[in-house]
Amino acid sequence: MSCSLPTGTGGSTDRARSVSAPPNRAKPSGSLALILAAVLSLSAIPASALTWYTVEVIAFKRAGDAALQAEIWPADPGRPDVLGAVSLTSGPSDGSRGFELLESSRLKLRDVAARLRRSEAYQPLLHIAWRQPGYTRGRARTVHIHSRLPNPYQSAGDIGVIDGTLRLSRARYLHLDTDLLYFRSDPDRASLGFSVPSQASVFRMREDRRMRSSELHYLDHPMFGLLVLVTPNSPAAPEASGAPNDPPAPAE
Image 1 (cartoon, rainbow, N blue to C red):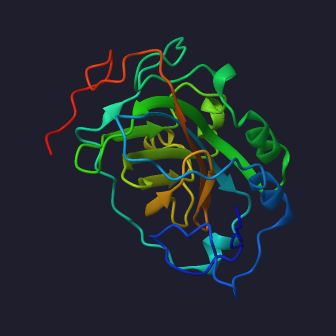
Image 2 (image 1 turned 30 degrees about the vertical axis):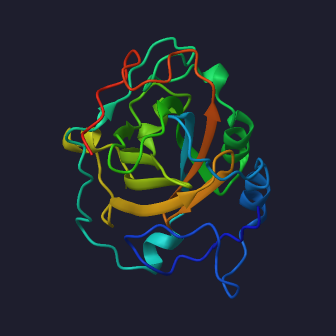
């Protein structure tokens, strides 16, 4: 994959940056460029029967407040619509059912997350994976993800909280609709009287990204970022919309 990632803090405050930057855009910092070099083969999606996918995401914050000072941020960027979104279930899972969190031992990007954690520029906030059917755009499910889901960085709420939705759909290529909020402090702790930053404390990333399966994708925002890997697999569960723990698909 050929990708040049931006490192500047300018640009839209409400849209995530593309993984393929224009030629005149600055190249990524060395640490993140090395992390993103671990990508797999590209593959377009054949028009065939329902395919199941493993979706793995890492959300991380950027260290320092340079971006905070460089732009004017809205006090209230709005909120993602989580009503009706699928809630991921927790508990030991071998991936045989849909929309269940996979065990941490089944995460493929553990080394990537570890490199982020060891770097001085980034801090992981959330690392989860689940399996789901790849429905067409009209039938695709919106999935609610947030920092309180069981994951290796669940205690990172002291330094930031992720909350929002992802929606994976399938046509010739995969499409991922992202609508995420990053809170610089835990909103529940703030409501209990803990100190809240005087600057903007919540930031929103929204993007509709065309993707290829088995390729590591980077969604960028001046304050935080998202790494997404979507891998097709042959499920143990029946490849049918009525598989266990697979909520009924909305009508076209």
